[in-house]
Each structure stands twice: as structure tokens, then as C-alpha cells.
Image (cartoon, rainbow, N blue to C red; front, top):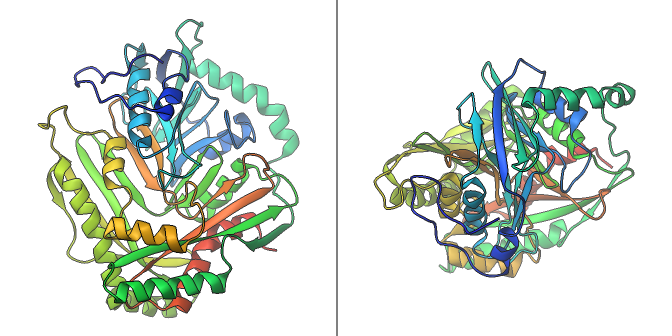
Length: 466
């Protein structure tokens, strides 16, 4: 890559400095993109089983899908690695640099067409996991009845028609797909404690409650991890498909070995409008409809959960306000029903202020402004982050960090990496699962441990129990 400048119509963005920026700006070749319409090729995630390799790293499957719509990709035309406190700026500046002067033919012109990159960034700037921004060689997308295929190729190489590239990929993989008759699972799974055992984590929650009651902070989100060791290598396409099937209303994602189905949208930016779905306050479902209806009512009236939710909504509104002409949040949350749990949820919306110097911020800039929200960190943020570092005793990796996609206009969708697992890049038979809970003054450590167990269920069920 060359010197980073803003895309046409925007002033140059500040160029990040340091080793992370140097790595980012040396990655990838100058690219051309072409997007064309496509006849329905079949379910998006099934395309990955026929085209993407079973890799957790470069070239592996990329996905952002909800209720059958979204985008999937494979191959790696460019890759940006970013780390440290400036990882958002590094990724964003490198993306703008890739786009500078790039030839683009887009016959569809919708959010998600033309140049698109997938991204996954660590929760904490100090994490060794860092983050990535990946441009797939081939991307297939669906919105409603509209399908498209996008190819990214080096400008100095001949480029075939995108539909021909897709047909070749599907045709070349047909025999293997037929022989496999679908993807195999990981076989037997053995689980073990991560950084803390369940009782030790509950003790950490009790200590957090004491600190909150002492007035040091209002809320903190504590996470725990679980390690799964499998008989066979975990195929990210298989895990992704299982999660998407079980949780169709969530955003199912796969980026660089991070696979999950998140119910929480950090930010969507689309044609000047901003949307964020905030979740905070959780109760486990029983499977009995009448009992679950009663539990939903108790959740909606729970002082502890409403307090936790209010902190989370307030943090999102406060972070978006400087970038928007108007922001709107509901007076009260609704109860979001998922197969395993129910959450208090609020949809926050805004209209971007395009009169700001430099124009309206892109989705990566908005994600940087929002992260970390009170839903994954706490309130006030500095005190909560310090307590997390003290009590969790682990690196969260990319759990609860931003994950999603961005296009050339700065539009895109970025969720929080929840209900997810990271497949070990060095040993695909080892997987880390994560769950976190919001702790406030009225929290009960035993109840929080049970809630964390419920949040581990999606990936545990997808992988298979011991």
C-alpha cells in the first residue's frame, strides 16, 4: 500500500504511526473491484462449503449473515493487521489507502457491493490478538431478492467476469462437495476451565459487587472462558452453519478463525442513518412457554436488569451524539427472545451529521467511538476496564470486540463478537469459548455464573457436548 489519504470527497485522515501502521500499510497489492448481478446461487453459507477452504486463517471463510441475507467471501486479495490502541484508525486508514484510485465497476450499487472488507478487532488494545481487515477475492451477497458477486483482483493481472469466477469455483469444488455430502463435525469434545474455574469466577463477581457497592464504579462486565479440545479439527464452515441454523435472528459471522452468532449490533451505517442494538439484562429460558412468558415479564420489571440496561443505552447515546444531528432511544426496552435466553433490548437510531469537518464518519470510526460500550465493559469505562484487567485474569482475545464489514462509502455493519469462539490458529482441535455478564450493585454471583453458563450454550451445543 501507499500513503494513506481519504477517499474522494473527504480530506485526508490522520495517518497512524508505529509498528502496527507500518505492518498495515505494507500489506496487499493495488486492487480493482467488479460487482455484477447474480441469479440465485443457493443459500449463502452453503456456497462456503463448496468454495472456501476449511482454514481458520488467511484464505478461510468470511461471513456476515442473518436470516439468509448478508455477505460471504473467500480467498484473500489483501489483509491488514492492526494492533494497539490505534487499531481502529490503522485499519480505517489502510482501507482508505486501498481504495485510493482503485478501478471499481459496480452494477448493483447497494451497501455491501463494490469494494468490501471484513474486520475483526480485539476487545482491548493491549491484546496479542490484535485485529484484521480482510478483502476477499470473491464475495457473494444477498439483500432481499437481489444477489451479487464481487471480485477483487490485482490491477496488473487479467480479471475474468465475476460470474465466471464464481461458476469456476463452484464447478471445481462440485466433485469434492458431492463426495463429502456435507461437512463433518469435530467428533468427541472435551471441555476444561479456562483462566478461572466457575467457582473462582463467581468469587471475582463477588469482589466486583463489593467494589461497586463501595462507590468505585456503577457497572462492570466480567467475562470467562472455556476451552474445548476436539477429536478432529474444527471446520469453521461447519461451526458457522450450525450456529446460523440454531440462531437465525442473530448475525452469524466468521472472520479469521473467530466464529459466532451475535444478537448485538454495535453499529450499522447506511446512507446517512445509524442504528445500534443494545442488549443488557439477561434471563435463561426454560423451554416451557408459559414459564418463559412469566420470566420475560419479571425480566422487564427487574430493577437490577433495568439498571444494567440503562447504563448500556446511555453509553451508546452519549458516544453517538457528537457524530449525529439527532439520536433517538426508546423510553423502555423490549424483551428479545432467543432459543436459550431472553435479553432486555433497545434500538438506538441516529441521523449522521454530514456537516462535520471531513464529512460524516464511516462505520469503523463510529465503532471506534462506541467501543467499548457499557454492555461489554461497564460504567464509567476507565474504572470498569481497570477492574476487568484485575479480576478476569485472561486476555479476552477478540471476544466482545467489533466484528463485521465495511464498504467503500463507509457504510457497513459491525457487531459485538458475542456467543462466539476462537479456533486456535496453531491447533484447530483447540477452541476457546467466551461468555460475559454485567455486574451491578444488586448482582448475585451464583445467578451471574448461571447466566454465563447459559451464554456458553450456543457454541457448546454447536460443537457438541462432552
